[in-house]
Structure formats: C-alpha cells, structure tokens
Image 1 (cartoon, helix red, strand yellow):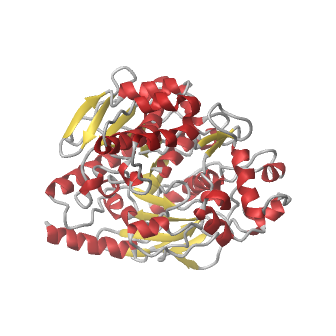
Image 2 (image 1 turned 180 degrees about the vertical axis):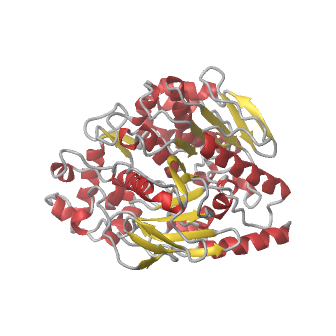
Image 3 (image 1 turned 120 degrees about the horizontal axis):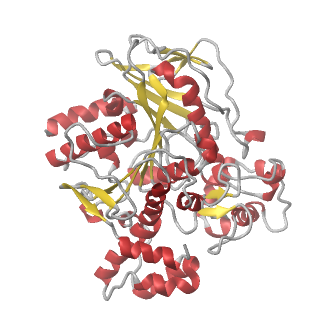
Amino acid sequence: MAEIRRRRNRVRRTAILVPALLFVTATLGASSDTGVVKTQHGKLQGDVLDTDRGLTVYRGIPFAAAPVGELRWKAPQPVAKWSGARDATEFGAICPQGPALAFMMGIPLPETSEDCLFLNVWTAAREGDDPRPVMVWIHGGGLSLGWSNQPDYDGSAFASKGVVLVSINYRLGPLGYLAHPALAKEAAGESGNYGFLDQLAALQWVQRNIVQFGGDPDNVTIFGESAGGTSVHALMASPLAAGLIHRAIAESPWVTDTNIRPLRGENGLHGSAEDVGVAWATAMLGDGAKQTAGALRALDAGTIITRTAQGGALGSYEPHVTYGTDFMPESSEDRYTAGKQNDIPLMAGTNRNEGTMFMAFQPITDRAEFLETLKPVYGDQAEEVAKLYPSSNADELKVQQDRFLTDTWFLRGTRRMLLGMDKVSSPAFQYFFTRVNPENPAWGAHHAAELGYVFNTLQGENYDETDDRLAELMIDYWVQFARTGDPNGGGRPAWPEFEGDKQAYLELGDEVRTGAALEREINDRLETIRGQ
C-alpha cells in the first residue's frame, strides 16, 4: 500500500507541477489527444496528463481582466480575447498575500501578482460523452491567504470519477474586501466584497464555457473549505448567484461573530465594514491624509500586503462579508434564518478539533487570559460565554479552548446554514469529520484535515488502509452529491437528511456512523447570548 501511495503521489506532484448564455450543444470542444479547446475568449492548449483516460488539465485560464490600476477595488471586468492557442500548461500567478500559509505548508510561496484572476480545469470527458457535473473549488485561507493550485487541490481524482473540476483564484485581504466611503462614492454607494464578485465572475465563466470541457452548466456545485466555506455560505445566500449554482458544499465554513458586517452602521456586536476600512486606510496613509480613491489606488500592492500582515497599528485587516449591498442585501446569517438563501441542496460539516491549529499560534496559558480574549467580541456577555467552557487546570483549558474555537468559528455558523434549510424545499446533509491526522496526531481531527480525503490526495507515510478507504468513500459521497444533490447511493453507508428537529449527521472517521444533535445545547446557548 505504501508503494501504491508513492506512485500515486508522484502522479499528483506532476499534476500539481453575468447571465448564463444559451447553449446549442453539449459536445466536448477539446481534442483528447491534443488538449486544445476553444472558449469564448480564444483557444487553450492544455496539458494531457493521461491519454488512455483522456485526463487533461487546463491551467492559468484568465476569467476576468487584471484588477490593477483603475480596476483595483472595482467589480471584475471582462477579459480580452486572444488569438492563437494560449498556453494553459502552467498555473497563473496567485493573488497578493503574505508568506504565512506557504511557510506553514513547508513550500515556497508561488509568484504573486494583482493580475491573478485565473482558474484551472481538470476533465476526462471525451467527445460525445453526456455532459458531466461541474464542481467549482474555492480555496480557504481566511480570505487573506491561499490559492487555487495548492498541492491538496489537485483535481485529477475528481475528473477520473466523471466530474469536471474547476478551481479558482479570487482577490484577498484588503485588496479583495476593503469597504470604504471613497470607493462607495464612485460605485453607486457600495464597496467591499470584491473577492466574492470575482467568484461570481468565475461562475459566469463556467456558464459560458464549461460545455467545451464536457461540463454541464445546469449542474454546478460550489464547494470550499474554511474561507472557501465562508464563500460558499455567502454565495448561497446572495441573490446574485441565482442560476449560477445548483448545489453547495461548505467544509468548515469560517463564520464568526466579526466577519459578517454591515456596510454602514452597527449590528449590535461591532462596527461597520466602512469603519474597518477607514481605520485601515488611516494606518496606511497616515493620520490627516485625505482618503480618496486615487490615494488608495496609489498604494503599492506589496506595501499593502506587508504592512497588513504585520497588523496592529500598521494596518491590521480582517476581511468580511459586507451586507447592505447588492451582493448581500442583509446579513447572510439572517437570510438563512428567513429562508432567503438560494433554494439548492446543501452539504455542510465541521471537524472535531477545528481549534487546535489556531491554538498553536495563539497559546493561552490560564483561564483569566482566556476570558480576556472573549471581551473584545462579547463585551458584557464574555463571562456567560466563558461559563460554557469550564476548566480547572491547563490540560482542561486546552480542551475547552479547542471546543470554543470549533464552536464559535465553525460549528455555530454551519448549524445556522443547516437549520435555515428547513425554510426551503431542498435537502441538507451534515457531516462530522473525526479521523485523527496520523501525520500530526497532537492536533487531532484538525481544521483542514479532511482535504486530502475529499480530493483523494493523501500524502505521507503514516496514512494506512483505513485512510485510503475513508478517502475513497468521501470523494464518492462528494461526487454523488454533485451528480444528484444527495450523497446516498452506490452501496455506501446511508447518510440521513438533516432536519431541524433531530439534526442528524454522518460521522466520517475511524468508523462511519450516524449521530444526532451535534453540540446542540451549547450552540443553542451561544445563539441566545448573541441575541439571535
């Protein structure tokens, strides 16, 4: 099995190296031998990975104009057409960001550029095949880090199972999410959400072009993890995504008490998106400087990223979903509660130990310190929140801090999405991932630990047959859901539908089994404390 994994990893490392239009044909526009495909903007020369299987990847496809100069902090614009066959064998530049994620992964940071709105397509469809389900992957990274072609995100396994897999870049950090009065003044009173608008532009590209890669534009599943899950949360709640998406999978969606903000005013927990933007611009431009759109666009992108990454007085910035906009008319969480989200099937879940990864970088040594970290978010309610996570010694404190971060950063928001599905006709399915990472068991079933299973890209000598079986099972669940809107079938363990009364879920771990009401009491209490 270890030798099979080594061979499989060598293959993977090689692979790593607007309104919808009418379609008159679902015939594949590419030659499986040459890897040439014609899109609305011009021809692409892809990389044929496996001639026998017809597996081809098209890398670095521009789906919008470079958001530079006057296009910085504006909605994405159409990309220009090109002549001849554009080389699509190399990934494009990734969006500007600091080195933190690459350092954590132990790899060099790829080339960054504001010209980063690229996507990639994996397909094994052949001419004459029936149109295949499309899955669009949205990467994580706190809306500040990450890129579409991280090693775990190789789409070959999905393509081999009959999916056309698309992965996308989108603007990050303040370049992707800055809300500011000067920007709103030139855009009919709105600003922020540029990274989400990029995602919409990529989905519009899919509608116009994916048929040429063998994909079905009427069967598009968005899926993402962490900030990618935040993106799924936002897109599913956005009226602008109607018709562009048909199913959604949110893996550990990062939905906190501070990353959904009104454009202006307050929501009872914190200030507005514009308040955050003005404070950031003050740190960047200096006290007393005139904060015009021109002055903001004159800032060097490298300086923006470097100083924002340093944080504090230099310009700390937490990206967020900005509501009170065309993209998000009211709080996305409120839209789920009212049943205003797009009525499409949802699969959503979390990992048992979401918090351990973050605790490693923000250690808390005693209970008093734990309480102090709650006060900026919960104010007078901090004591009530702390009581939900009791501890009497350092070991217990670690367990409770993990539970607190898991609940408040990921599980609470996931439940809010799932409970909102009671208000619409489409089904919902919840998972709970519990397999301890054998490469880093101290972190348990940590944040992002499921990714190698979902993409079937596990790498490491400590994975065993249990992991291989779980990976095969999970990718099959994900593919089946993309095909039909229901993960069940194919002889796999039955996955019960989530409904508000029982709140059934499927545990994915050493065993695959059903459960109900995951951390229901504590998360209901959190909602009460928040006044929801």
